[in-house]
Amino acid sequence: MGRVSDLPRRAVTRTAKLASLPLGVAGRATLGLGRRIGGRPAEIVAAELQARTAQQLFKVLGELKGGAMKLGQALSVFEAALPEEVAGPYRSALTKLQDAAPPMPARTVHKALADNLGDDWRTLFEEFTEKPAAAASIGQVHRAVWHDGRTVAVKIQYPGAGDALISDLNQLGHVARFAGALIPGIDVKPLIAELKARVAEELDYQLEAEAQTAHAVEFDGDPDIFVPHVVHQTERVLITEWMDGTPLSKVIDKGTREERDRAGHMLSRFLFSGPARTGMLHADSHPGNFRLLADGRLGVLDFGTVNRLPEGLPEPIGRAFRLALDGDADSVMQVLRTEGFVKPSIKLDAGEVLDYLLPFLEPAEVEEFTFTRAWMREQGARIGDPRNPASALARQLNLPPSYLLIHRVTLSTIGVLCQLGATAPFREELATWLPGFEDDYEAEEFDFSLEAIEEFEDVEEIDDDPADAPAPKNATGDADAAGR
Image (cartoon, rainbow, N blue to C red; front, side, top):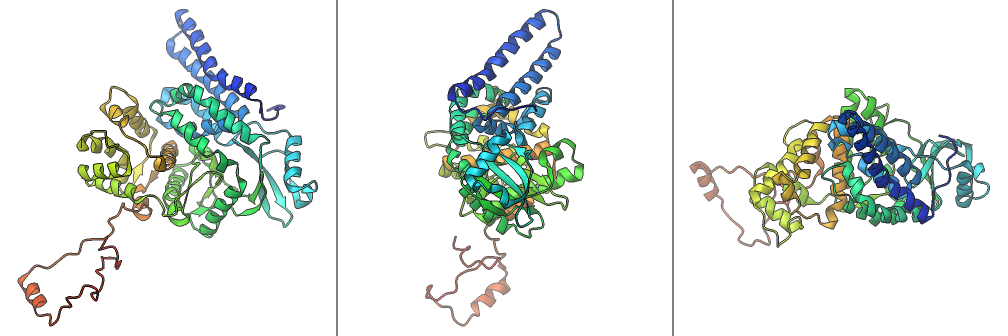
């Protein structure tokens, strides 16, 4: 990649680079118009413009790292919603943003290690590979061998990454229209606001180490999910066990049908089982953070952003899903109003809301569902086309702050599943891990025959004191569930 300068930190430099995105697109559009007037076919000109825009997108966001890179990663999982003729030129550039960026110079790496591990940092390693194995939004990773012989991943935070991250996200608010134009129907400003709210967590390697350790302990020995254990951590250096595997971006690009289905199944399982098992939701679900291991397990990286959910995923989500699948429009509307998805001042028809929601729930209607780009494009078109009634209804719905991150992670994960084209038993995972999706109890079947009534009347004594009566139990033996 040639010689790469240090991470730009001066606000004026970074602002100028970000500003070049919409300006560059506008310039190419003008050039394209001139070429069309000159007689070149419009579709050829459009393809050239899209390809060059994608190249500039990677160049600018990749060099800036920080918040610009983070936004690029977040947007990359939504390319499946684009029409194929538009998505193609962007796909390669956006995929690169998922797990690669221009690296820091060696001198910067060495200084960061000395500042965090001490001047004798090399004695902590039997080997240290100078060339980074991966470079992402706020740090890069080097492969090394720890002093006890374990192969480890050394994650080093870019100097000045905090200031760069905040500066980028502030500036990106001004170019959100350009970023939003990549994915019709996606409002980028709330996404940027949510990313800003997570800045402190993203930069705190102590929090990340705690979250990763909790997941590594919980999933230790799990046949489906693998999380590397933390080996050592300082303020800006995080050292974890090394994990070999095929990045999900490569599975998307060249994976077999079996690999795609397996990766998609395990990704959906991790999405829903994580909060139930650890009380945390992994909140950075782009393909660069996942590996398909040789033994079929899904390896998970980067716990810098998690949503802490001590009670697991909110029960009303599962309940609303179940009610919608049962066709109970009025009860669905009641849940949406109670949870704040429909504000008190908004008047909506319950049937129309149900009709709006059901297409999104198609994966939960069948035992196995195949996620495709065509399906996601269809959903994007429904809410992105102002001529579609669903679009107008979507604009009247509200997204409560407590659900914002859950919504983004779910949508991002579905985007990855569509990129994989995975066939997965999505409904089974919902039933197993999503509170409220399955009924709390199954109604008992009562025998109202004459013989049964007579048998009941033959009972010698009935205790009239409810305090002494045994608690009623449901079909699973839960004494509290019947009362609930």
